Image (cartoon, rainbow, N blue to C red; front, side):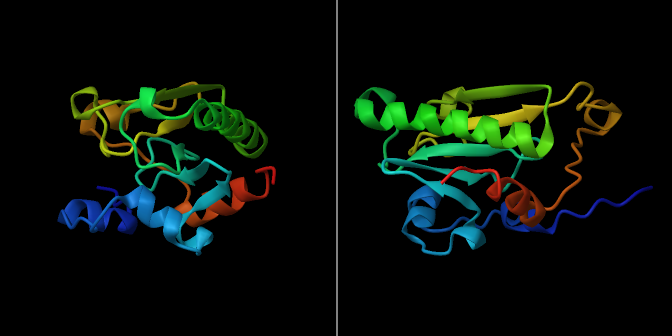
Amino acid sequence: MKTIFAPWRMKFVSGKKEKGCVFCNRLRSKNDQKHRILYRGKNSFIILNIYPYSNGHMMVVPNTHESRIEKLPTATLCEMMELVKMAVRSLDKAYKPQGYNIGLNLGKSAGAGIARHLHIHIVPRWDGDTGFTCITSDLKIIPESLDNTYRSLKKHIKK
């Protein structure tokens, strides 16, 4: 049997939840590297997903704590889409994925893990990126640490 280490998932596995909104907490922090914020715009920011579906999985999050897309100002929505483009460009340069899943899960019933603060997922995909481990053991392997992913993407994000 092979052992796969993913120590950053212990917080998730243990069920310990931080107080308040994780996105608002990250936004208030000044330590972008620690919290893996790749870019801060005027109305929104780009952050790595700490429980990624694939290498480079990131999210675009509005600075406003809002769960309803129709309540966000047009300027925020426009900037969020510009940041999605920026994220895709950086992923193209750093990892050269063959496709993307990009989308929002609005509400708990739609699969939102953090339903009270909407966010757009950008998930890079490669041909064959779901192998036998996904099918036989419900296991996905992420071959790079979050710190290395942060460093790889940070140098490609436009300021």
